[in-house]
Image (tube, rainbow, N blue to C red; front, side, top):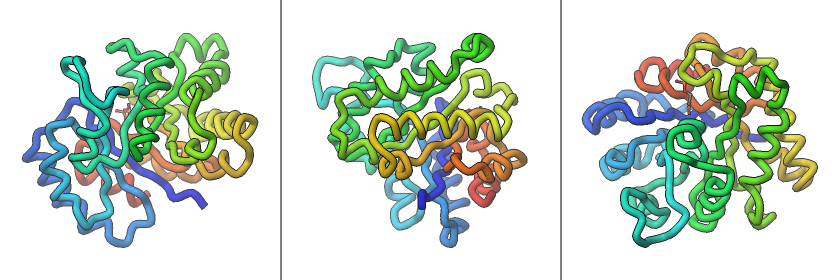
Length: 248
Ligand code: 13P
């Protein structure tokens, strides 16, 4: 059985003090949860939060990473640097990185390979724009994004990924895909993995939904057969809301 994963993507928000208080507020509430909880923080919070989450159910993620270990890449951060700060997951290919920072399927692929080789679990984001959806290209887009992200990845490493289906039109807009629509795309993603890598691997990979998830829609989303969790933006910024989502 796949364990549900609820991840909060804080994007470029909060401060270290806020983050520490946030973790203090939620960590004791998580002792009985059956859910994996991940906080995707700005880089500067990681060192401080590493101590704060120690011994709790909370795992740390970065929001981006370079594919080289070191070199002349001003402003970038590498897998070994993230590992020094206790990072176990990294978001790769978030639509905001694709849209504003020239992230492409090719760079996503390089980052996925590096993350897996570094024993950091990549949370690979895929999803279509509104225009693509209206042109009925959703399935083509997400299968292309997934297959390209995994190109050249060792077959026996594929099961170590997490996928997040985040329709771009649902991010930060208050519009969510209906749980049934999200489930259909996620089932299709699982089927795409199955065709390429077999049933066992396709059944082992957690696939999350992201896009305007909040305390009132999480239950319906999590009731869907193929949805294994959520990647939460805005509603992960307040400890109370995030806890309600974790306790869906
Ligand atoms: P919102 O939950 O704010 O729509 O953001 C979703 C997201 O981009 C998570 O990565």
